[in-house]
Length: 74
Picture (cartoon, rainbow, N blue to C red):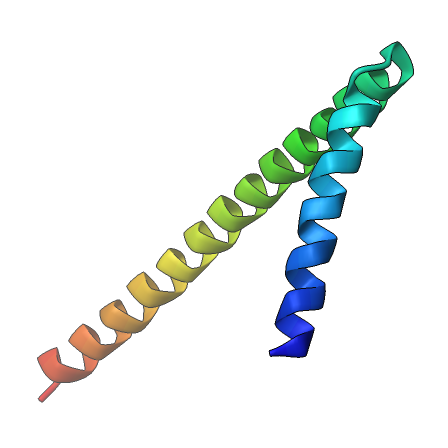
C-alpha cells in the first residue's frame, strides 16, 4: 500500500510540474519535441506491426496450403 501511495504522489507531482513547465515558451517547445517523438515512435511501431502481421499472414497461408495439399493427396 505504501508503494502505491508513493507512485500516486509521484504521478501527481509530475503532472503539477509538467503544468508549470508548459507555461513557459521553452517548456512548450520541450513538450512539442516530446510529442513529435512519441508520434514518430507510434507510427514506426504501427508500421512494424503491420509488416509483421503481413509476414505472419503469409506464413499462415503457406501452412494452410500445405495442409490442403496433404489432405488432397489422401
